[in-house]
Image 1 (tube, rainbow, N blue to C red):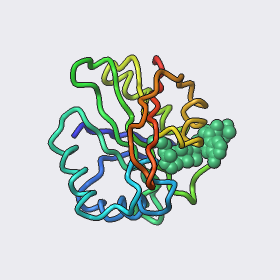
Image 2 (cartoon, protein in one colour; image 1 turned 180 degrees about the vertical axis):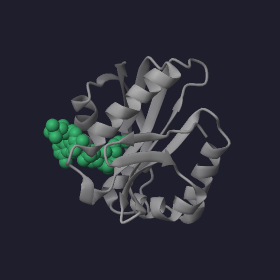
Image 3 (tube, protein in one colour; image 1 turned 90 degrees about the vertical axis):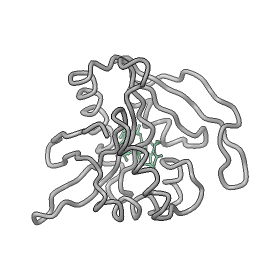
Image 4 (cartoon, rainbow, N blue to C red; image 1 turned 90 degrees about the horizontal axis):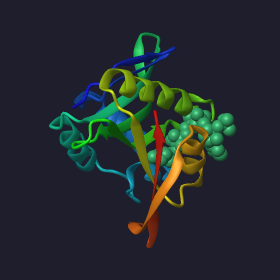
Length: 176
Ligand SMILES: CC(C)(COP(=O)(O)OP(=O)(O)OC[C@H]1O[C@@H](n2cnc3c(N)ncnc32)[C@H](O)[C@@H]1OP(=O)(O)O)[C@@H](O)C(=O)NCCC(=O)NCCS
């Protein structure tokens, strides 16, 4: 796993650990909107999250970072960001998903942490361009990435099956 260790004001990123997988699962299964972060239209099972975790764990290019806030000395999970530095071109990175706890959304947290994450990728890993992929029906997701200066690049048609219909997949990117 590619380690992401970052303090952003009162929030901090640290790698997801096996012990925090239960909390991550709760977050992913919090509501239906979160299928946009997983690409899966049903509640994730502990086996599915374990499988995702193991894939990242054995891969030195991939990150799976939890966003935590310390409350009374205890780390509370506020969000997760998952992605990788490209295998062939290390100047490029992908953020495959971001998810912020629904009770903490629309407070500027997502924007703040992606800006910090892009700065880290650029300064520490010399990443020059970041790509994101999102399901076409995810209007909020699209507005979110646009607000961060990401531009539309291309559409992969009929890419994913969600709730009994097929959705296109949109790729956006931003130069750092
Ligand atoms: C997308 C998501 C990560 C945004 O996180 P957030 O912390 O609520 O976002 P922010 O408060 O930083 O908002 C940044 C910008 O995104 C856009 N945005 C965020 N939520 C929005 C909403 N509900 N409606 C419209 N625009 C929205 C706005 O442009 C906003 O800028 P503004 O506040 O200046 O208007 C969050 O909604 C989420 O976890 N969604 C479920 C999973 C998902 O869709 N992930 C993205 C695809 S991988």
